Structure formats: C-alpha cells, structure tokens
Amino acid sequence: MSKLSIRIRAGIAAGLCALGPCGLEKKYKFSIRLADLVRSIEAGPFPGTRLYAFMASRLMRPLYAAIADEIVSAGHRDRILDIGTGPGYLPIEITLRDPQAHVSGIDQSEDMIKVAKANANADKVAKSVHFAQGDAAMLPYPGRYFDLVVTANMLHHWSNPKAVFSAVNHVLAPGGEFWLCDYRDDISAEVWESLRAKLPIRCRIPFAVGPIASAMSAYGEAELLRIAAETKFEVVLLEQRTFTLFGQPMPLFNMLKLRKPLALGEHDTSSLETKDSGK
Image 1 (cartoon, one colour):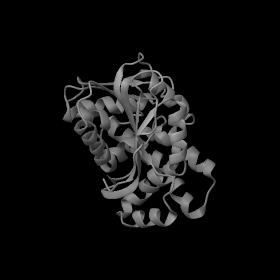
Image 2: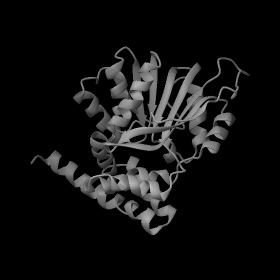
Image 3: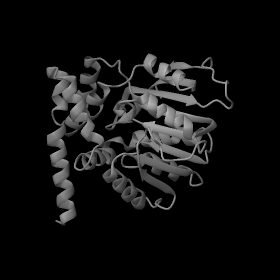
Image 4: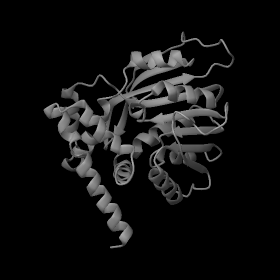
C-alpha cells in the first residue's frame, strides 16, 4: 500500500472519529454547539476534507449531477461560479455537459482545492475548469463578471449569509442569477429516522454526520427571503426539492433562485413562485 493511500485512509478514519458525535445528536439531544463544532470540520482542513471528498464521490455526486442538468437545461451561461465547491463535482458536471462554459469553483479550504483539481484531472476537464481558494464573503473576482453563481449545501455553513449574498450581487452581471440549494429546516425527527432506516448500515453514520447534523443550522424560508430583499435580489423561485442522496430520493432540500436586477431600482419580488416539487 502506498504512503498516499495510507494517508488518505488514515484521514478518513480520523475524520469519522471526529465527526461521529453528530450521529448521536438527534437521538440524545446533544448541544447544538457541539453539532455546529463537529459539522464545521466537514469543510475544514485535512482530514475532514478527505472524509467529505470520499463521501461526496460515492454518495453525493448524483445531487451535483442533477443540479448541473438543471443549470444546463436552463440555457447556456458563459461564466459560472460555484461557491463552496468542495471536491469540485458541480463545476465538473457542468463542464461535462456544456464544454463551452467557463466554470470556476471557490472554497475556503486549500486542501479541498487540491482535491477538486485532482478530480477535474481524473474527469479530463482540468483545462476547462478553474479552482481557487477564497472566502465566500470576499469573492476575489471583478464586479459584474459572472452570469450565474451557484452553491450546493453550503448556505448552512455561512455565519454571515448576508455578506455572502452581497458579495455575490457584486460579482454577478445585471440579470445574472444566484441559485442556492440547501437543506430544509422543517424536516421532523420522524422523517429523518425513516430516511436513515432505509439506508445500508454503512451509510447511516455518514448520513447523520452530513445531512442530519447540517440541517440543524439550515435557514428557514422566511429568513432566506428577508436576506434576499436586503441584498437587493429579485426572488425568482423558492421550491422544495427531492434529490438523490446516498442512493435514495431525499425530500430534504430547498432550491432558491435569485436574480440581480437589470438596472438600479428594478428590484421587485413580485415574481416569486413558491412550490412543493418532487423533482
């Protein structure tokens, strides 16, 4: 076994040991601070990054593929940014479907960017996607640069979502859109348990480590709409979604689509469409 293989396996094991307490939180009502602390390792430095990348490649990639399908089916965008790109699968999936798009991914973790670049190389799109380390609240891109900004399962990590929304508004071209997919905050303990019970035993701890713990700090619909209004976005759609996660259809998500007004003063939320969809 190579040294690299040993290091990766050791990292996964260490990550599981660090993240395991989240699996007990729902059942034993541990402090929300403990869950927040443990969940933050998900996007932190090694070994948490390698654990998350390991899980994403096997259990979460269909989610990224479904979002990529929706992005491409909505029409070609020349410049696309994925915030909190993690292992880079969303930019990779978009590029595989639309090779003409210029897709970038940004993540605060230097190690995760290394993983994303390796994954892009493995999928033979390394020359078509660009990954960079950076803060979601201080995006290192010029104003009015992107046609679409997207983020998947990252909103609940942001301690100051309003700052991120403002940063996104700055880098979006007028008429550009901001798509956010994240966990719903209104899933009952009974629903979580029924979904977890359907999974193979090997997936139950990662499921608790990921979705169950993360959803504890998900933002509600009213809060999302308030932040959108304060940052001068037009709300195009807010919809409950079912995506495949851990090999199972999971009705756990909100999809929020925002639009930057074409001109100053055009901001108008009257076009909001709210649905409960089985997509």
